[in-house]
Length: 337
Image 1 (cartoon, rainbow, N blue to C red):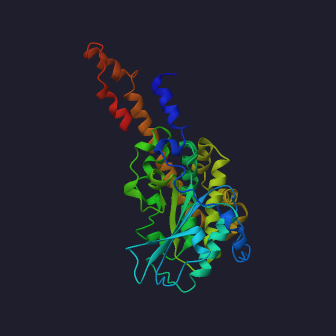
Image 2 (tube, rainbow, N blue to C red):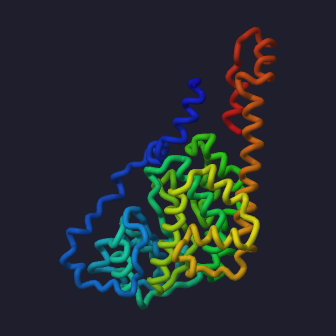
Image 3 (cartoon, one colour):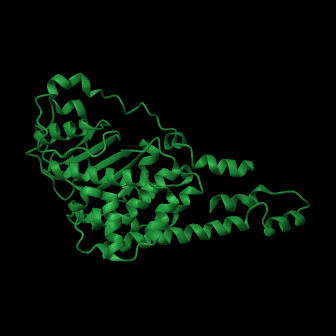
């Protein structure tokens, strides 16, 4: 294996934390067990069970008319921040990274304290999922599954979030063309900042080592928030059970209603009933088309790379013209495609 090939292989096995030099300890300062005596009196009856007890999430809750919110048990899990995009004493509650039952406790204590706040159309709830330990291939698998079912997720959240400029569906963005290509180039080279307002924000990878899900509107319904997080967990769990190549084949071959139903049931399992499946074929076709488009773009880029490789006919001719001396600028295009 050449040095070039070795570097390509390394790009797909290094973790996101390695690639972006994420400070893994910076945000992980909470030890909820210290407060267990105080939390034992909190009832979790109205918060659904957590479907993934190992994955850390961070939650951002935007709200307005926040006078009197917070304090007490809330401050164990949440930090309060100002937000200039909100009105009427608006603020954002940002959780420490939590997992397992602590997600339920964090949601419950906050929602018990914000019964009088307002959730206008300006407010939303963002969920960051920890992917610091993921390789590029694992990350790409998650994105592919998400892309296929994205329309179903927007129908779940409702409130016209599909048309909101701060959580744009990924399948409508230009980023789709390069998604599958993340396997062939270091993800650290991609500039995701222009897509930070996509429903799935990949710019959070660089900042926090997370994927940020921005679709959910502000709501007093804590059960819906936990259900939303669980639907996201189902996407991650399904992606973890399948390699990228098999996922690509499966998604690209989806073309009948029965195959769509089977796929949704495989991804969401017992939670498929939480989704609106009345127009399933029409909904999934949007994401499947996007995956096909990404695959075609990737194949085209791969062919261009072959043309500009050091062993290509073009490179050999270039070598002859320049008396055996390679000019590295010649190969920059292969790196940039």
